[in-house]
Length: 204
Image (cartoon, rainbow, N blue to C red; front, side, top):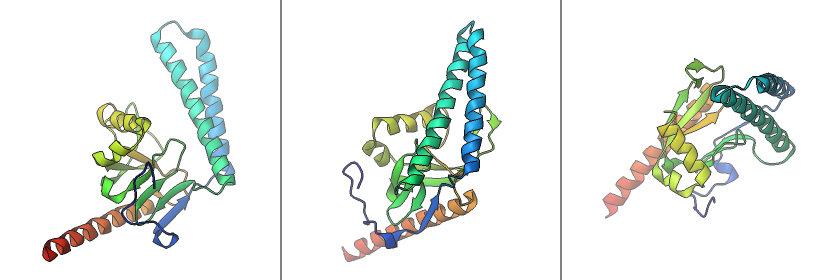
C-alpha cells in the first residue's frame, strides 16, 4: 500500500513475475566517481571565469550534476548493504521502480497507458545509456507527492519526454528483456481487465 491506496490485487512473493537488481559493482562505482570528479573539476575551472549568466548557469549545472552522481552511488551502496530492493520489480500489482534515488516507486497496472523504449539525449546529443519510458494516467499523478507531480509535468510540458523514465543502464538485465517483460505484463493485465468487464456485463 502506498499513500493510502490499496492495490487491486494484493502482492505476494508468488505474484512476482520479474526482478532485476542493480549491478552495484565496483566498475559502476569507479565510473561514477571518475565522472563526478571530472564534472567537479570542470566546475572548479569555470568558477574563475564567471562573467555572465551563461557561465554561471554552466557552473551551477556542473555542481548539481556532480552532486547527483555522488548521491546516486551512495544510495546504491546503502541499498546494496540493506534488504531493500535496488532495481525494478514486476508483479501482479504493477511495477516497483527503485532503480535510482530519483525513481518513482510503485506504479499500478491500471495507471499505465504505454510502455516503450527510449534513447535519452542531452540538448539533442544522444546519451550512451538506454531507458524505458512510461506514460501514466491522471490517477497516478493525483495520488503522488508534489515532487512526483512536478516531475511528470516537466517531462510532459518542458522536456517533451515520457512521463516516467526507468533507468536500465545499471541493472543486471538487458533493457530489451526488461521491456519485453513489462509490455507483456501490461498486455496481459489489459486483456484480463477486458475479460472481467465482459463477465460483469454478462451477469448484469
